[in-house]
Image (cartoon, rainbow, N blue to C red):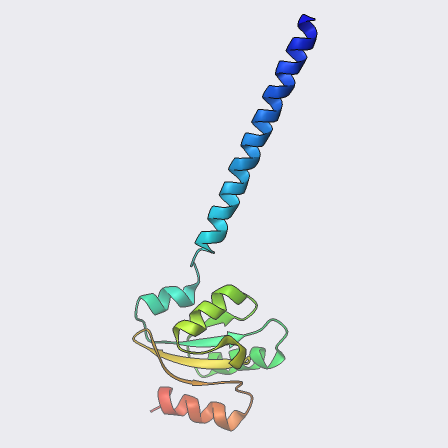
Length: 140
């Protein structure tokens, strides 16, 4: 009889511990969902600092993006990359600049002055467009 009571008490204890752990895990998960991802993105940091810089919006499978990266390097233009595959982060940054994410196509270049969007070109694949943009802002 004593063994049955001990087994019953042990089982009740284990159930209560399990339920308690489940509640803690669910609560932790909800806190993470509500708070959202941490803003460790270098673009967001530079915007917050009110820097003047270039943002290059890219996508993983974009061959033209690779070409634009090379052109920017060749032209000596330092840029900070905004990876479009990070949907939440990208959407937040673009909307903060007054742009809709679904209207931005890779590769796009954004010229930021004092942390604010100054000028941009969307889907920069044309060499003439690229050259005129770069000349307007970076070449004397």
